[in-house]
Length: 510
Image 1 (tube, rainbow, N blue to C red):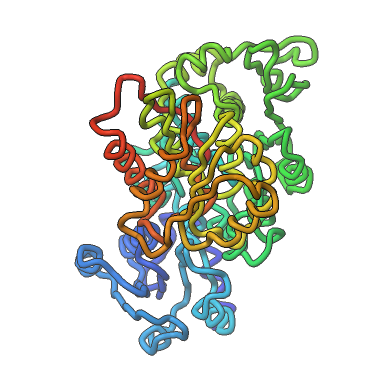
Image 2 (image 1 turned 90 degrees about the vertical axis):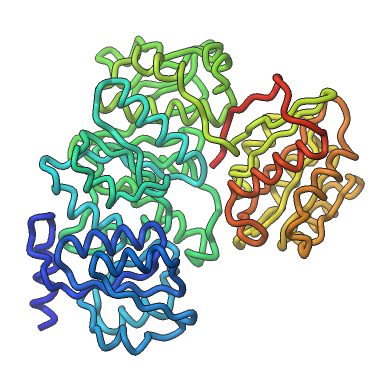
């Protein structure tokens, strides 16, 4: 029976395969979990959703689509109903750690586990010829690069959509009745952990990129090595271009070690002079030396740093994202003039080095999306004299090197969040005389007004008050966006009135 089930699962590689009656347990009822349940119910599978909690709206929708819901606040062991359901397949949402008791139970029972990305890959032919997938990952910069790539593709006349970890489930994108030529898929390390594990579900992107790699999500993966291994999966089976960061040797090593399709090329990007098969910068000009016939002696101009500065896109890490996105779309045949035109109208998301106020010579900058040290490092590099608001959930990541690297550019620091001790100790080691303010972690409702007041007391003309927490937000806020909104609101309240005409937005480090 087990072999027969494995054989059946291996054949489920199309929307048009026979999914009817397959017993599938879906773990989680967030955006990803609901999309999986909705998709499987549409296919005719028997679906049981297991979640620790469920909103009234999603509970009602599950009933409408014919899926069963099992809620259990404690999922430390398999609920009786799940055992009785005897699932033939388990689809896991990204938030479940690999060592979660329900996943260990599934492993013991020999139940195959898929993530939402594998399910979407198998079903990608629903509306006809499957869209190509361009896959993007990295510790930071994913969302901006995905948005840039999709914008450039649309400007070139392709039907393209950003999806995945960016907020639009891939399962929703592949079911869009209009269909797409290409999907630009943001993949988190959580999602990548579950790909390419099963027969019939091997992801094979058109082109792919790992933008950078730094320690993050150690609490989820268990070690930095496992985190890197998950990220490296982005390159497996890539068909055309494996794009890597020349300034990050680990990404190049990932490409060297990847098992790719025959003919796939390694394409580097970086802020220096490009070599053949690279994209880079020469005398302020962004150049392509990869996608032209005579790449050993000539280059194609894409845009200039001056033009990017005029569009608010000249922060170094944003320029790197632009080069990565340009490499991806050039691999798809987008012309250089289209890239240049699309950059002229591109705008970045909120909470990414967004200037919320400028008054009395002081800039107040929201980079709440800097949720790890690598992102905060990029943000801090953009300013010379900083009042730094930092802290939150550090996710097991060492903060010491970040503090040491930027101590000289700091004039004061304001600590927020529950993981303040590690930051406090780092400042005692590397900047013991630096003015340091702490916002009590219990002051949840007053965190930002207090932090802004402390920052305002320390700031003087020429300073930047920078919210770049280097930590996740869920200890005190719903998400990084709420953290950023409350910061901006507190700044307006502290300074009085609305933002003046000098305020502008730009930049990211996600």
